Length: 545
Image (tube, rainbow, N blue to C red; front, side):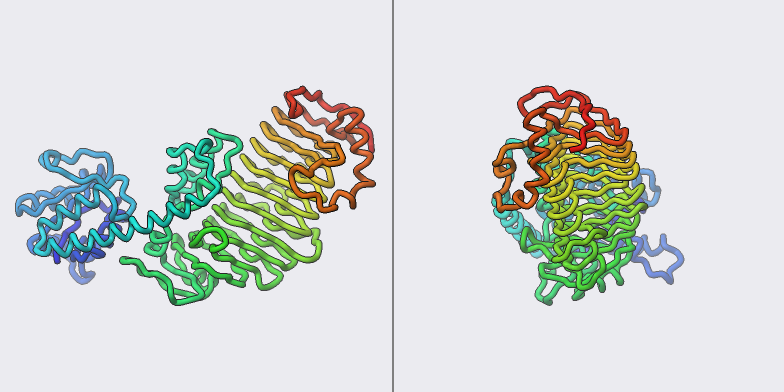
């Protein structure tokens, strides 16, 4: 069809390989120096021979290639033979005389055929080829396929509960362009930029479809599927396996593992820096379910998990982070066991781990949803946490929460112990059946710009030298007989706690106290208000109800 010699700087090899693969999808024969036979010592002889036989010399211009005498020489050779064609890998002006020649811009190209610069490149190469008609026909077919996929995605996206008035289009694009494993900081930056626009923003809508399934399958090293009937896009070279454990065992660091829809009952350990992405949306996403009393996923790496449901019904954690800085995006983590367990959690973070969790949900019954042991940390952005018959979070560590919701039924929403110092900013914390924030034993939470909702309970309970800083929060204490019924249906839950609650309710109704201090506790309250804007004085009560 057509043969192309690719000239590039070795620092740009990753993008050069992607260009090479996409050209081959269109039927071009390609060559670059990594293709040279290992037995040939004189690489310059090989290059000279290839330059004389190809239809085109494609030069990938960048600041690195401009400084390469090899690239300049190959570009001059192509120009001399009337085979030269240049493209820009970045916002850059090629050296003389190539600056006077047109060069398509691929600085923002991600690999799709439906791209202005890529379209110009292929049409230019087709003009130098002896088989222009077939090349352009293949290009049109790929572009049509991508447009169809994009249209289906937009139709599905339209069904999501998005609020365009609170989610500017230009900001949503930042998150939709999710970086690869080595760009986690960019994801965090984009999430924070959204939060800065609106403290009430739900990030799950903005990040629901970070990348097209088509792109994931094409770039995957392994695909985990219950069936062999999995699409194989042009250019894909993945290995199909039946379990996630098989993929993890065979994957190299940096590999992309894609999971097809289905329920995968297994417990896996991830000690490699790999990326695992689930296909589909909502209920169609793959589910990883523990099949024994062990964590469904145990992490001790900088692995990245995206768009997965992870659950256990056994007496153990759903996700256990023992070390490293794993990233978890758009995942549902659930621990729904029949029996109550004091040592379990849906999400457990050990002392060496600092996970980054964005736009995910964490839920549990019969145990706490989140557990941080001493000195552990983490960053949680736009995460929803709910626990029934257990703490929303038990913390001896120092995690940071921003734009999150934490709710507990029958236990504190946030329990901080033993010098724990979590930070909550622009969050909503709700408790039903126990104090919302409970701090003890030199604990030092920091809660700012948040909403603390107490339903027939105290908002804060401090004991044993607990302290902390609480600034600019809205504190709501609902004391009426219908307290909490506006949030969820009253199914008789409160009746079981009525005798315990009555004393709190009477005190709150008569004195409007919202906190209890015991054991030399000295929290610092600054500029907190009631929902009606009334300023709340710093609590000074030491009553034991």
